[in-house]
Image (tube, rainbow, N blue to C red):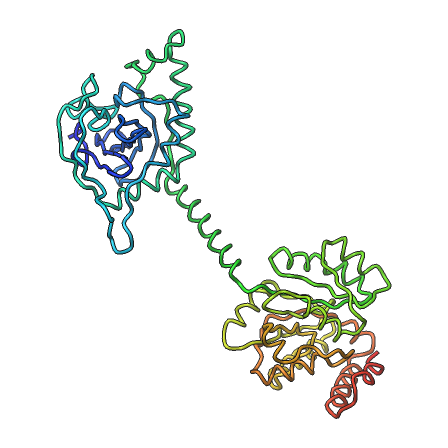
Length: 447
């Protein structure tokens, strides 16, 4: 039993000339091993590529090379053997199970040293004799096509390790060659396995699976609609100092980040450029700056962010998920950055009002598809209420996506002017705007 080859006559692929057999012996932790062969050219003698040790479960636990006398093969140095690894191919079944041509079945050719060769732990009953001629003729059986597929891909996964072992094999033979006589080393019966190494199949498979998942995620990110983040700035040096690392992170994640400067007189622009962020200029006025940024943006999704507002973690993915359904625009809940309890109440009131009215403000980080932005007419070139006006038009296209993870916006205006005074001012400005007072007039009161 320990001298037989499985399958009978060896498994072969007539197209590539690839050939293998399994040798069972059940010594120690190794149940047996696979031997893989390939001719250097069509019709040539077989060259032994690698041995694969398997445990009782059939899982690979090691790799090893053979000395020439063991397999009686057409031995070649590593530099010539390694290219053969890419040619070792068994036909792979398609999803219908069709192979196109038989996986194995060509008649065994005479004078093929590896066709019935033995492993390092067996005698020559099923092996080539000392002249290299097979001792018997057998019709090759057809192995399970999935086995051929597994072998093909195993050599792809472990190609680098096998190449190293082949070079180590050659180095070992050189060390054992008396007076540089490699032929003597190749026939040295005391040297059967010149190189070997254990493998941890489970660990290696986990690495492969992680790499594949990484590629899948990268492809998903590549296919995701590009998102442009547009941030108007005007003398915002302090905000740039605080938030530029976050803007850089957005940019590193693949988003397009555009800072639209309205004519800053401090070092806002210098700070942004030193941070590697893209800056464009526009006439002063938040509506006009936002409009200019939208015109220059290339993303399929537009997110408008105030310079003193911080997005929650994972905000871009939340936006993409929110717009995968039928809705075409949305906003985040807001939390005012302050220790004053009254401003926490104000934050909840803003979020509730926005849900009930379907109207959102710029502090809530408005986002929308480019198509929705263009259909709604975009931001008006006005200095105030540009966000209220746009969200009112977007509301006609459908209700907003209301994302609960809050953006954190600055409470500096509330604290500087007083909470109740600011509330009354905001409500008064909005009422006046709805009654038809021009934004150019209202902005003087806002400042």
